Length: 168
View 1 (cartoon, rainbow, N blue to C red):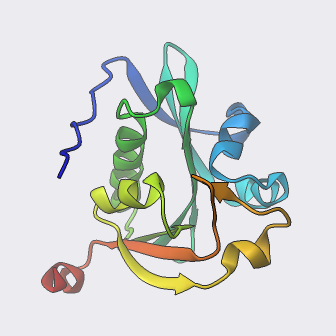
View 2 (view 1 turned 180 degrees about the horizontal axis):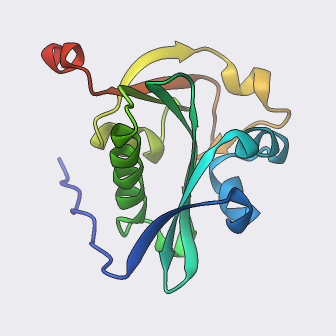
């Protein structure tokens, strides 16, 4: 089995909370192909961006579902900065920030295959449910990754409660 290299630590990477309009729309579209869906959830989201030398290279949008449950709505990294640890550092920053605000659970919905799934699992997210045919029902155009149409959405959750840690 091939071992994945540890993400590089980008020393000049800065992560800040900011207004979603500062993030280029093309970046949000890397993780969600629906401009309509993005326009619906961004105004209700808290957004974080990763900067290198004042240039946005990654962004994340999260929403509070309750006082202790948050949902990761979108996380994306510019293609030229992918596989360098930007997404990992961004997600770790967001997890730390949400935990400091009382998060007990962070949820995310993603496709049933692809690099996104392993990305979340490496950070401790676990599959908690499957929404069959989600992408067929919710997107007008098929979403194709690696030549395969996405059909089902997996719901993954990372929990910080003592009960969750007892299960692992």
